[in-house]
Image 1: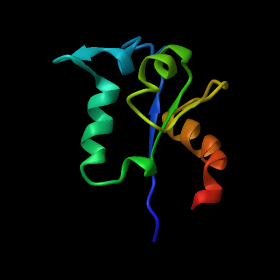
Image 2: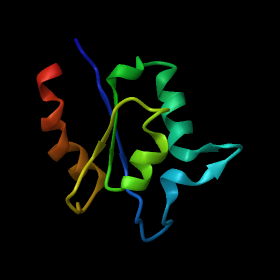
Image 3: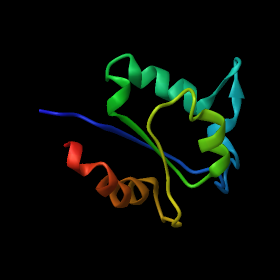
Image 4: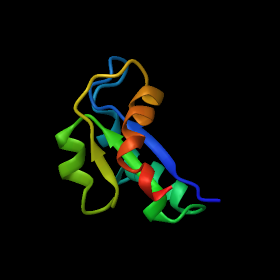
Length: 91
């Protein structure tokens, strides 16, 4: 069985704009999330789906699988489900 972890990272959130790039103890929240997941899942199986070129540009050297999404979605689950098609052939 293959496992993939999909992490939605919306930059323009209404409750906390810029949340993925918010710095906490010298790392972004998205880096912290990625590093925690990477403790149990190989990094090649972790995918970040973001709507922000800022997130992509800032973290592409630190996080291998960041996929830029262009559409607006109602939820993070919608963002992941729609964009999973881009990586489905691996699974």
